[in-house]
Length: 347
Image 1 (cartoon, rainbow, N blue to C red):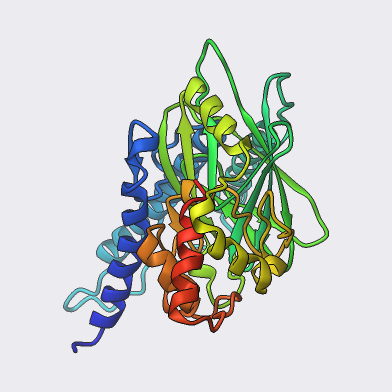
Image 2: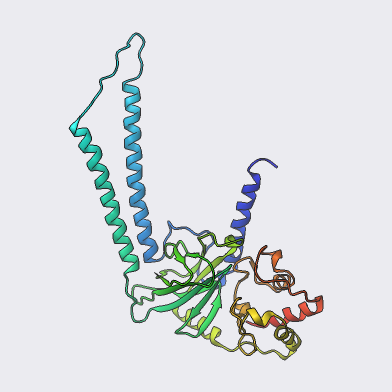
C-alpha cells in the first residue's frame, strides 16, 4: 500500500458512512445534502456566519496580497546587480511608516471586532417568537437524545423540524445539555458550533428555510467513537412535521406474534439502559426504542436501520461501532432472532 493511501481510504469510508444513511432519508424531504457545507446555509444563523467568514477571508487575503506584493517588489527592486556593491538606502525613524503599520492593524482589528460582535449578537440575542418550537438535545457518548417538551416526543439521533417561510416563520430553539463529557453540536448548514457541556445549559436557534435532510455531528472530541456521533436533521413541510409528531406520540406497537421477543427484551439488561412505552423499560443510558424503526440509522449513524443490521448490532454492537458502551448481550441465535423480530415491529 502506498504511503497516504490508507488515510484516503479512511476518508472515503467516512464520506460513504455519512452519505449512505442520508441518501436513505430521501423520503423525508425534497432534497438530501450528504456533505455538510457551511457555505450553503439554509438558516439565518448559518447565513450570518458565512457572511462573517467572507469578510474575514477578504481581509486576510488583502493582507496576504499586500505583504506579498511589497516583499516581492523589495526583492526585485533591491536585488544584487553585477558590479554594484552599494548598500540599499536604510530607513530609520520614519514617522509615516511607523504610523501606517500601527494604525492600519488597529483599524483591521476594530472592524473584525465590530463585525464579530454584531454576528454574535444577531445569533445569540434573538428572542423566541410565540410559535417557535423548543427542543432539548442531550449529548451522550456517543449519541444524541432529543426531547420535544411541548409535543411529548422523545427520539434519538434524528432531529425533525418544520420548515420556516417568510409568511409563516417557525424557528426552533435548542436547549443543549450533556449527560457525561463535553460534546459540540454542529449542523453547518443550520448554525455554528455550540459546545454541549456537563452541568451547563447552552442555547442555540435554527430556522431552516428549505426542506430536506442535513447532516451534522459532534465537533468536539469526546471519546473513542466521537467520529460516529452523527446527527441527521430532517426538515419537513409544516403538515408533514405535524404528522411525524403525531406518529411519534402514538403508543408503541403491540404485536402478539412477537410476544416471545418482547418477553426476552423485558427480562434482559436491555431495560436497564433503554426505555420503551408500555413495558417496564425505563432506562436513560441508551436511546428510547418506542419508535425505533421510524429512524433511518442505528448507532447514531453507524449503520442503516435494517432488520439485518439490527440483528448484527444486538449480537455484537462493536461490529459497527468499536468501543460503543452497549455490550453484547450473549444471547443465543434463537433469542436474537425473536428479539429482533420484536424490535422490528416498533415503527
